[in-house]
Image 1: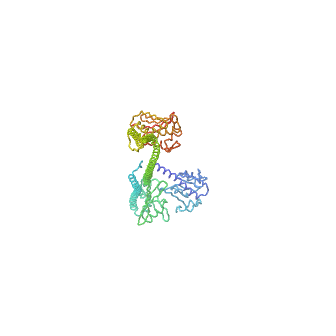
Image 2: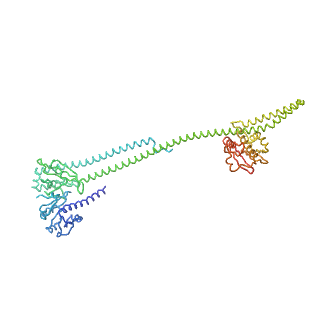
Image 3: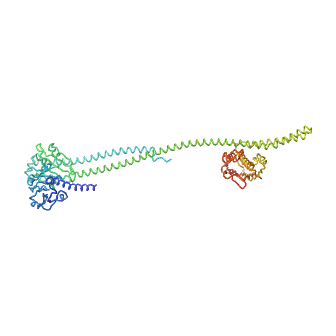
Length: 136
Length: 482
């Protein structure tokens, strides 16, 4: 029984990564049309995006189409001229130019988009993502 | 016959046991399912009740400390927020992982955090929150009543309990408690496993019982069929026995008829023998009569010679009478056993047949070395001996053997009749005791040796056999020693 329980945990852990990856692919894939999407990633999301086929993870912001930032303050200044998508609420609140965020809160996925960030980089959300735009 | 594994009574007891087990198994299944469901409900119910008590106290505390102005008061006092969050933290355990207060934002389906009792994954004040199962949350606002629902997060199964904070008859916020159902789930899966195991075990047990029942039923049918077949065989045997009895009776009747034929044949021969025996005395009587007649005509008949002639005639008549008696006794159908010896048998037989055989220039030699007294059917044995002598006589006469002889020996319990007629041809020696088998061209019925064998073997319990020696046939009768 314990073995089965461990197996279940292992399964859901793997499933969680796949689920998160799918979410990134859905969100960023609907905003950025080019394939692969050249992305600069910091934090936990790096491993997730590296496993995806639609992303080409690069090491600097210079050639990236989008930066996915999470808990790495050093990279935030360098990527000021490209759209930033954060993976923590704290970064989303601090980086005012960030056009969106995805993170987990109380075991629930939280998706946010900021009107100002979207307009700044002329990004358009698909209809099903527009309900996640924060008011004000 | 081997009986089946179960007796009839045991079979019915077993049958009833299986039915009881099936009913019992269904009862256990139902009871187990109900008990399992009850345990789950009770466990969940007790947890819900506990959470309800916690949230009641928290709502009372929040209402008291915010003076029924939840959002405004919290916005104003960071210390109060901290104090209330400490109160929320008090109830946080591994199971009650998240305890937090949220408020719905107007005109959206989003909420914002007001208080959060978490250590890790702590949300900020007024942070936007997008819950799952949004309808459940909205329903709490609508009904002002607590709700709970299960939801599967990525990592585990949770139950979220939502308690409305009502101030001035209006829902101003929700206390949410995320309650891990892992233990409940574990118990549920354990109960499921147990239930599954019980069902499998009971099913297996029932299956085994049913298989045994089927095999027992088949075996019972098999035994029934065996019994039926045995009965049929028994009936057949009875029928067969009746048929055998019928056939034996027919054979006996046939034997009787054959015996009768044989007897008639012997009667014919007997008449011939009587004629032989009587010819000489009758001639003597005739001669005496003629002598008497002539002496009377010549007037020379004196009383003395008359008496002599009359006495002689009387003796001859006595001889004729004795001859008749001998024949009558010989063929008398005596059904009782008598004490006799081979010597008596030989003498009686030669009295009958001796003259007839002697007239044909056949020498009869006797060699009696046995004085055993047999208790047997003497007359029938005499007929056997007579038959053997007559057969030898016929062969010797037919083959015109010079210096023909018939030798009759009696040694202990063996009676041997041999002749010098050349013997029985080897190709028919096995058949000569069969009924209606005869080598004689004239007057042969083929019954003599068959009847002899029947008399010796069936009536007297002995054996009769034939061999050939250098001169002729050797018939040997062996009677059981007394």
